[in-house]
Length: 205
Image (cartoon, rainbow, N blue to C red; front, side):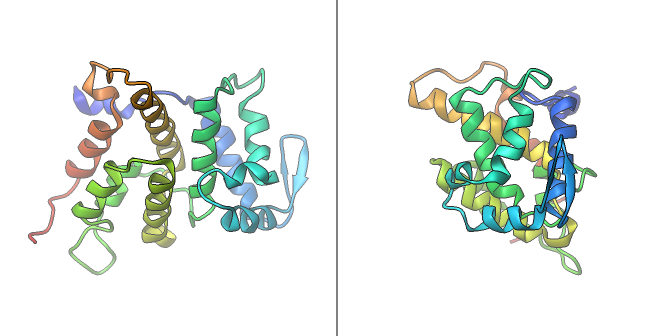
């Protein structure tokens, strides 16, 4: 039952997924039509990679290409500060992803074995550090490192995005001293831990 629960996204839906996938495809091309405009995606991606973390991407066209589509009357993602900050972190991380890989949830992909080795792509220690990130900048930098560790195998962008949105919501709630949700399967730490630890046996240290 728990595995079925964690497969469901908490904040984003299939409509948002389509936008995210198209936006990422646009970033890989020099000329790509995206929701009424044509963009040099590689130029936009280069600008995003140079932006100050975590919210510097909000000064660049690459961020607004996606934000203007998600925060509209069609896709109905409400442009709250939580959602805008979460989208900025996602855009900053996605700019460093090599590919969109939907074969497994994002956290599960981090526990897959490195090519030709026995160790996880991200070690249990670094995964724990990712889970315990205290600031958006810290969280963003560790996610970028995770995307780079995945290399050409890529990451599940939609799974990553929903996790980021959930993390930012939980972070805002902590700042306001609000109690966490009662349902453990709606907490990011539980969802990611179940994905990471239930896929493969961890190597002996």
